[in-house]
Image (cartoon, rainbow, N blue to C red; front, side, top):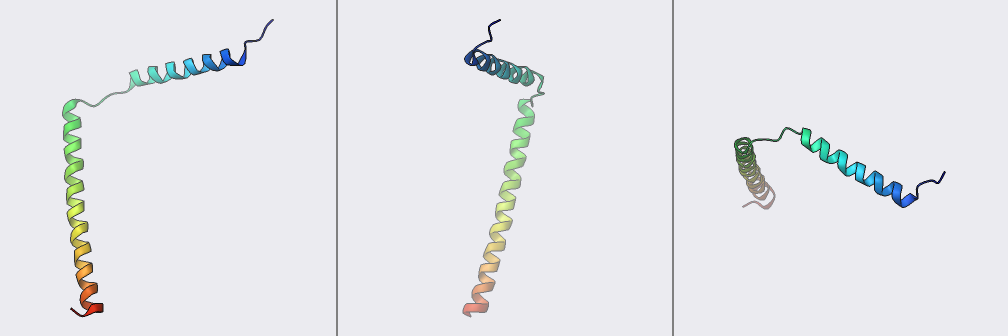
Length: 72
C-alpha cells in the first residue's frame, strides 16, 4: 500500500473545508432587501442620536470644567 502524499491530503482537506463552507452558506436564512434597508436605517438613526447625546455631554462637561477651573 502506498500512502497519499502530504500535498494530496492537504489539498483534499482544503477542498472539503471550502465545500463544507459552501454547504453551510446554503442553509443560512438571508435577510430580505426590505429588512436590510429597515435595519440599516435603524442603525443610522441610533448612531446619530448617540452622537448628538455624547456631543452634548462633552460640550456640557467642557463648559463646566472651563468655568470651574479657568473661571470664565
